[in-house]
Structure formats: C-alpha cells, structure tokens
Length: 126
Image (cartoon, rainbow, N blue to C red; front, side, top):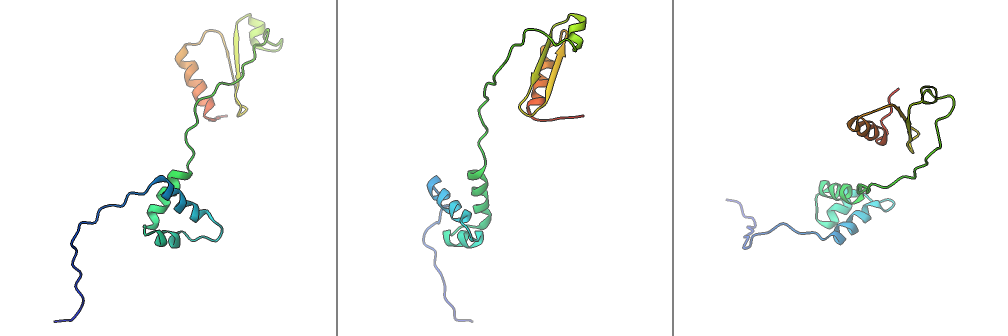
C-alpha cells in the first residue's frame, strides 16, 4: 500500500457564472500588447478555448439595423438609354458598393426583391 494524501469532497461544485463585466475584463486583458491568451486564461481559472469563445462573442459586430438610403428622382431617361428609344419606364438603382441595377418594362415584385437582395449583399457576377 502506498502512503499518499486523500482528498474528500464534501460539496458539489457547480458551474461558475461569469458576468458580462468579468468576461469583458478578461477578454480585454488578452487584447493588451504582449498578452498571452493561455496565461490570461490560466490566471482567470478558465480554459483557453472558453476565453476564445468569449472573445469571439464580445468582439463580433452586432448585425446592423436596416437603414434608409437617399433616393434621387431624375426627370427622365438619358438620351442614350434603350428606355428613351422605346418610350418605356425605367428604374435604375446604384448601390454604395458600386453595383448598378437597371430595369425597364414590367417586372414582378419577387424578381425585383431577389435582385435587390443579391446586389445589396455585394454579390457581383460578371
């Protein structure tokens, strides 16, 4: 038989609950110059993967709320466009990404929504 120490556990250890302020303080410590994530995690008594999970959660950008864009109504189509030659109505939308959508003639609403969604995401196919 070996002689060694015996540890008797008398209570049930539960998961620790971290407040947002505590998480922010620990994550901020990893963002300092020269900080080592594993050392910060060890000092806080957490696993380094938990620290990186908190960092991802706290440092990720929240999805931005939809915003309205300025709209300019132009008196008529330019003389070089096909709409001016055919006499049809035309809609032209220029996105901040530089993408441009030009629609002339009748288009159903579902097609219009799909095109705007694709261009608003910045998907640009040539």
